[in-house]
Length: 574
Image (cartoon, rainbow, N blue to C red; front, side):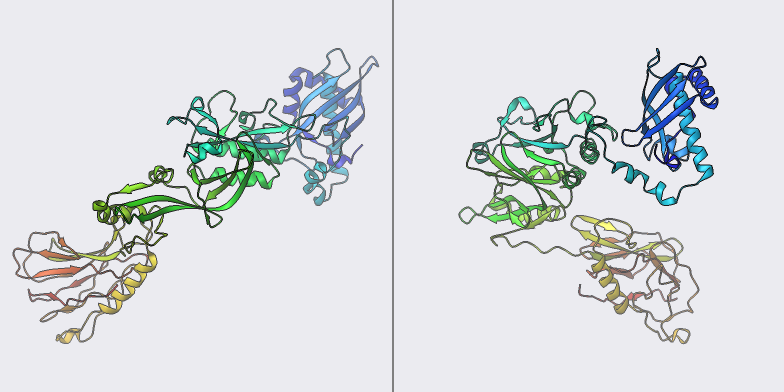
C-alpha cells in the first residue's frame, strides 16, 4: 500500500452521489464497524481496492476507479484538497450480486477517508510531498494490462480551390492543383484532427472538432495535445457559433481572430504534428508575416495600379494571399503536381474594410485623371489602416500631415473672451482634446514638441502699468494647464485678480459692456471671432506645433480697461 499520508480524500456528497444516500449510510456503518480489510490504493491505475465482509461472514471484493477534481472545479473552491488531493468516484465494480455502486463500494471509500485522516493526525506530511504530488503521480509508469497510453493527436491540412465565384460552399470547390493557382482561383485551407490507429497510421476515427469543444473532453488522448486542440476550437468559435452536428474541418479563410494563430503555434510547440492532406505535398507554419499595399504607375497609360504586398519572413511572396483576417498563405508547385504551403501570422488583424483589397488577385486600377484625387482623398485614409509603398519608385507618396494646435476664440457671457485649445488631426480629419489620454492613434511625440514650442514663444509680457511691471505667473498648476499664456499688448492693465482654471480654455475679462456671445469662425489655419458691438477682433492661429502634457486647461485673468485688445501675431514652424 502507498504512503497513507498521500491517500485520496473523497467528499461524502460525492460518495452519496455515486451509490445513493441509503446505500452510503449502510456503507458508512460497515466501515466504522471495522469490516473493511486489505485496502490498497494504486496511484498509477487510480483504483482503490478492498475486502468487505458481511455480517454473516461473507467477503466481497470491491474496486473503485477515482478521478481527481480539476483545479477550477466548483468543489475545489469550497473544500480543502488535502495532501493526497480531492477525488470523486468515476466507476466501481464488486463481486456481490449488485455488481457496482453497492454498500461494499461505499464502505471502501469511507474507509479510505478514515485512513487518510488518521495518517494526517499521526504524522503530517512534509510540504514538498503535497506540492509535488501531481507531478510525481503523473511520472509513475503503469503496466500495459492496467492502463493504456494516451493517444497522440495531429492536424491534417486540406487545400481546395473554388471553381466558381461562390467558393464558400464546398459544392463549388475541388482539390487544389497548380493549375488553379496559376489561374488565380480562390484557395480554401481547412484543418481536421487525426489520431494514431492501432497499426500506427494517422486516422480520423470518431474524431471531430466537437470532441474538443470543452477543456476536459477527449480524456483518452494526450493531455497537452487535447488542450492545444481545445484552444484552436475556442479561437475559431469566437466569431462563429458551431451549434450542432459534427465538425470535420475548420476553414482558416473564415476565421479572422489572431487567437487562432497563437493557438496553432501553441499546438506545434506542444508536439501536435502538422500533416499535409488533399492537394498538399508539405505544410509549414512560419513566423513574421506582413501585409501592405504597393502603388505603381503604368508608363504607357498613366494609370495607378494598387496591388497587395504580402511578405513572409521579410521576403515578398509572389503567390501569397491573405488568409482569414490575420494570416498569409503562400503556395509553391512541386514536381508531383502538388503544392507546398507556408502559413504565417500577421502582427495584427487586418481591418475589415481592407480585406477585400488585399484578397484581390488583380490590381485595382485608378485612371490617370483620378490619380491626384486618389492621393488627396483615399490615400490618407488607407495610410491609417496599412503600410503603403511604391517599390519601383513610380509614385511619389505625399507626406503625412502632422496634427496642428488649434485655438478657438469666442465671446462668452459676462463680458468674457473664451480661448479653447484642441488638436486638429487630418488623417483622418478629426478634432481631439488637449488631454492625451483621450482619443486613439495620437502622435504624442509631435504634440509634446508643439507644446514645448508654444510655451517658449508665447509668454506673458510686461506692460506700462506699474502694477504689472513683470509678467504675471499663470494661476494654473503645471499638471492641469500650460505654465505660460499667449502674448498680449494692451494700453493699460489692472491688477490681475485671482482666478481658477475652468475646463479646457484660457479666458480674459474685458471692461467694456457685455455683448451677445458669438462663436469663432475658422478660415484655413486661422480662427477669427468678431463681435458687432466692438470694433476689435480676436484671432487664433492653428500652428503645426506638436503637443504637450496630458491635459491643457484654462486660465482666467482680469482684462485691461481699454476696449482695444490686440494680440501680437506669432507664427511658429512645425
